[in-house]
Amino acid sequence: MNIARGRRALLVATGGLLLLSAGAVRAEVTLLSPAEPPRTVLDRVEVKVGGSIRPQYFNEMGGSDNGSYKHRGYDGGTRFRLHVNYHVNDDLTLLSYGELGVDMAKAMGWHDHYDQESADSATNRRQVYFGFESDRYGRLTAGKQNSVYYDTVGVSTDVWDYNQFAQAPGVGVNGSYDGSYRARKSLRYSNGTEDFTVFAGWLFPDDELHLDGPYDYRRRSGGSLGFRWRLTDDLTLGAAYANTSSEIKGSGNQQSFRQQLTGSSLTWTGGNWYLAAGAGYYTNFVPDPAANGLEDYFASDAYGVEYIARYSFRIDHDWVQSIKPFVAGDRLKRLGSADSQTNHQVLGVTTQFNHGFRLDLERIFANTSDSEPDSVLARLRYDF
Image 1 (cartoon, helix red, strand yellow):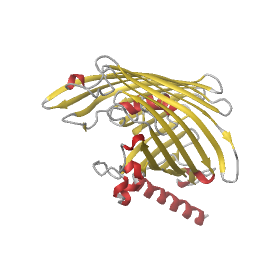
Image 2 (cartoon, rainbow, N blue to C red):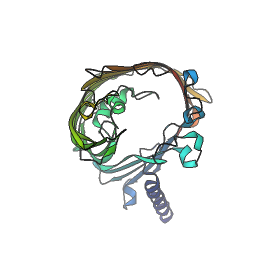
Image 3 (cartoon, one colour):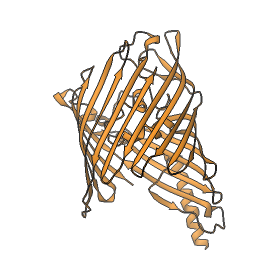
Image 4 (cartoon, rainbow, N blue to C red):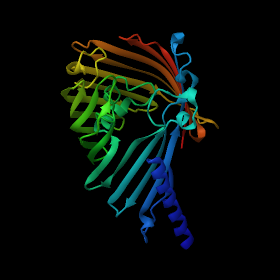
């Protein structure tokens, strides 16, 4: 018994060190499970770890990016996670989660494989939050975490790599600051059943974010409501509304904005198919690339649509689990004086290998107001 407790103590200590160094969680590997019946404090602790290492290659047609770090290969979103829970009783669980993003090329000093002009650190805290979960009272978390809008609308089509160019989490000034993606300084509550869950979120005032040129963005506050409704075993409907108060300063002037998001998603997972579509209407949210002054920094109105249709061929070979070809696309339209648009159509295939390895290949066809070239993307993932 003393040896077992010693091992559990070592695992908890290791998990604590990982949390300090990686800030991570939502794991695929369980290091420590609660014991039944619990006799000590450690018997109530659950520790999970995981991560995803993602080398990536991106090439624009026509050679416009020859010599760029993306053309040489770069990090496509490596992250490490740690989840530490404390089971107070059969109903109440205290939660803590952290997820650290790491630019492996920058961390290793491979200068030709990352953006050397960027001031971003080699690491960033993708998510860090704390809270509690109860079957009776719901789930309440605070910190940097996925927004209500992302988890009810954006997540439905966030399943291929070259995406989020029409969904709100990818088209604002910054999804962490405007609260549409991994929202900083946020409070989130959810409650419901397996078939129907409601969500509510609140954004607290945040620090200033420097934008291109002389401008700085600052969020004052915000709120959001959403739901996820499983209509049938295969069909799920999600919807959300978000309202954020913000301001932009520049050249001695200041302009206040009321940013609003309204969106919905529909997902069908019948048999080997995955079909999903998401759409949103955005007010004072999408930057206007041709803006003339603070008052016109955002397109007054815009809308975005994304879709994907994917089929899974189950292989179950010694080294290949499945092959998933798909077609996907998006359209973002800025209305009014902004009057610009982006369209992407994607042909891709995902090959899932054994032992956590995965290869994504995508061919992107672009039709945009700024003449974006077509491109090819390849990403190798190792998930653990």
